[in-house]
Amino acid sequence: MFKTVVWNLGKLLQLIALIQAPYALYIGVTTNDARLELKYLGLAVIQFLIGLGVVKWSSKG
View (spheres, rainbow, N blue to C red):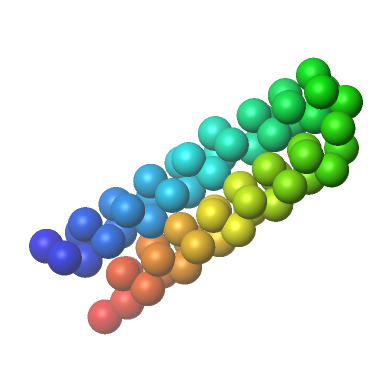
């Protein structure tokens, strides 16, 4: 059961990151601030990779 919860948490992190990526684009277009857009996009990428690592870790074994 613990592995299922951890796997679902990893997938949730990935889903939130995939929602944040278009939001970063929206922020960049509406505010015309490329640095802010890249900051939001970078955070989404890091969050997605953490979620991917959690999913792979929970699937082992």
